[in-house]
Length: 312
Image 1: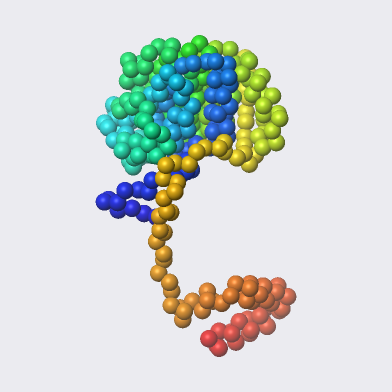
Image 2 (image 1 turned 180 degrees about the vertical axis):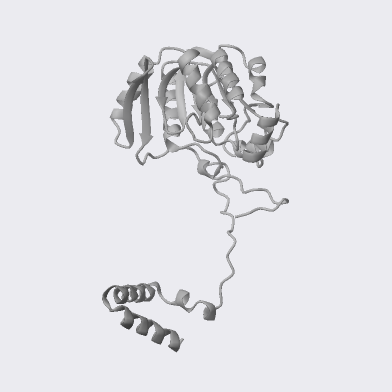
């Protein structure tokens, strides 16, 4: 379904209706890690850098505990800080507006998070050091920006807080890969696990959370697991095997009628007689044709085809 410039896009009824990239495996890991923090009595703020249309932000906002603060940061339709970032935003995020994000978020929540509209360089001055328990970085893919975003995450996280870094191994985001593995090798970041899209890490001790994660995953049959060691780090790799998304409440628009889909113009009967025949007859005829091609001599097959064409 397409919309015109004067027509608002349909409001989401389910989380899956919100455009964006948030695989089921990562939804499961977000849920499990946040559950673990809350069960341990860990308290702290939440931060997401780069929200696009709000899919992961909506998911993360549901885990806000009383007294905690949730901050999101994005350029939206604002000016990028440099030419490279401007080109990136124009190419990949031209449809993103703050209004679209807010509409989607408020479809599932009563209040908006605290919104920083501007480059992620705002974060260090706007988010208190050592205040966050969970940070999701999914902003610019340019090395310089990712490098700074990782540094900001380190500064705002609690000692055992968790940072999630998106697109760390996509072929179109080499700047993210360089910045992430550089942080692992030289800046003290310690991986907890790797999904197909994100690296989960901490500047604390990853051992306890890894042990609990391994026990959880080994008890499931819908998640592939491999463990490797490199440069003194234990790398826990996970991949979905038909995982189902964690339950998520429907939006406040769930009871509204589904939008009508545009119906393609029906062709005239004479223009496509094959399409008007019952499916079982079409299938039987196509099987007959295949058998003729496979079993009859080519000369006889061509004669049959020519005879049929002459009768049309």
